[in-house]
Image (cartoon, rainbow, N blue to C red; front, side, top):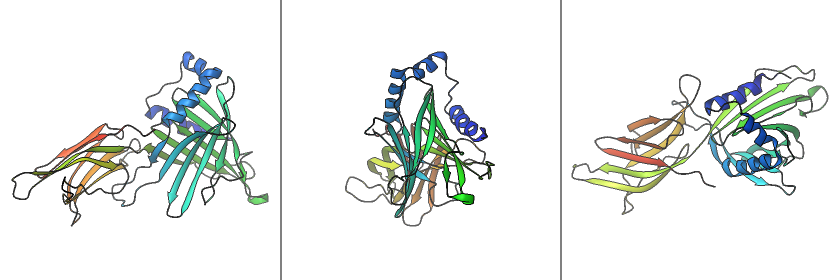
Length: 295
């Protein structure tokens, strides 16, 4: 089994999160029973939320979006469920992490979700490791197999997540153990919610109409702000993650368009996890602040 994909997954996430190789104290904490259980409980509190892949600026539809939920099962395993919903079809998987005694490694399972959203009866063993705030895991393609006979393929599935990003790599292998191709890598970023104020100047320039406490989801639909009287301001406001021209972090993209014609009135850019974003034009002013993640 080649370690290439897991190096890409874990390395990319650790570097982008500005993390370092764990210190001895980190390893000691992860290796103690109370430390491991405490970190699993912290994961359950920190990880849930909406995550999405960046889209290209010339694409209309958003990138892949998934919702991560966390709960403890009947046997006290930590269950992290990643689910993508498209129309009536659902897909995703569950990561089950055992609450065990001291060890730097955590045994668990990868459980695919069926098209109706229920857990599959089949699954694969998965080994996880905690390194600082990053948890990573991988299956063994020699054991994680799908299909029968000569059609059976092995799955090397690797994942790393830290509460702000999820990186997933999938690679299939032939019955002989050879990898079919380069791993398919998907990077998802936490999609937040912003709230704030939007102001539009009257056409005669005599004053401003204001929408207070407007909420906008990153990667969601365009919002049409209304004033205190419930009247539309005549614009649409949207936030998206846009892939850069070079590989690396995407950018947070704010766009304001005219509601009737779709004409772009203004746009601005920020870091993917920026706390604030806005723009100030002669006719339109937007000031949005990121909301804390929902727990």
